[in-house]
Image (cartoon, rainbow, N blue to C red):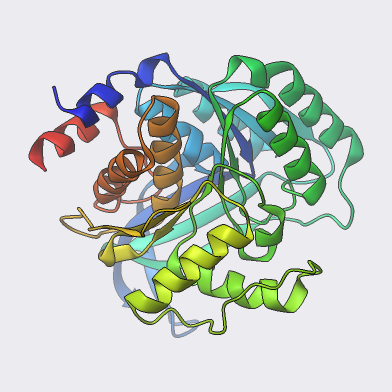
Length: 341
């Protein structure tokens, strides 16, 4: 048995908490044969429609697909979409006790219309609140306080929909550090300054570039971010920015995903590590970041070194980009990918 196979064999013993923006993804598939006489738009004849967990819910779905136990924490609306989402989550074995019903906001829903394997349009339904719903946040924090001890790691999945606030990040991070738990974050550009002193964050290249700009504009820290460019156009710029960003945020490691160019791992006191892509065919990149954070965190919780966990995350991402929609990688698929590579 290889080292990566040995790590995967421990996944079923792990329990990971996922806190973040829970989204319902709807897919409407069909075909186009003509343009509408009413406007210059294609007429899609619907053939099938289905729902999948999105956002933080897709992270939890990936964890369960990899045979781990997932505890999902967040909120849904008191509406039909919320009921559909809860039903989907429970059918996949996800622990939903940490999901709070918020009567003030609708369930976030993204509807994608796809014809001839191409996305025609995406319709988003969401409503942002001006101030956090205090009772909802108190319920969430109480659940985390009572439950985190039994988990091996915690993931913050930040889609910028209002749940992840500085107060919540500080609370979860401090609790995780006190209990010596791994804490990783799938980041939102505008919130990078929140993410200090955690195990890892996993931005893509575009998010990293935009985060550098955002930190320079908004940071109130007396210490300056020593990056004098915001376009990461080659390996030299990526390496320089990655090392400085990891130092500035005091991270154990930073994992930057680079699409078809693989990943770059930055650890304290170590040279950057290049991880080449393992994707055979790229069909749909939606949800790939969810797979990366799930596999990477699960690998760390199972005793993997950072490089080994990144290798597993890279293989897992290479599997899901060959599928339609935000889908979960399975333990069997990951084992097969390890054997193949």
